Length: 173
Image (tube, rainbow, N blue to C red):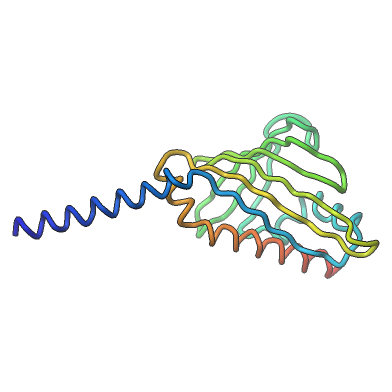
């Protein structure tokens, strides 16, 4: 019985060392997703900038609240609320850059991670626009860094799905 306990303890110990080493070796999650939208950049920007449209393309989005500052001004802070499997998840953001029809950049923070996100808009021609999102995030603490590394593919897929939903929403009206 004692040998079984030692073997199980060793296996658990090795698994924990491997898990936490993932966070040490890969402390940040960095990715870029993009989509081409068959709409002029003016239309894409208007749909993106309208907070009322967020529910149409951001998975689990419930609401956005202004926390401080004037909405749309650099330095303003806001809170996004998402429904994740019946649980409310909050992301606090601060507007870092707002250049109409060009760029929207923000810092983000919640109990699990912090980071920066940047949306860039580029006119391909008069009727097509490319929307690009670049994200750099870091888990808060070794546990979350490791978990973020393990979940990176799902996070990227979720963002790409949001972009596909935005494309469909933008092109439908």
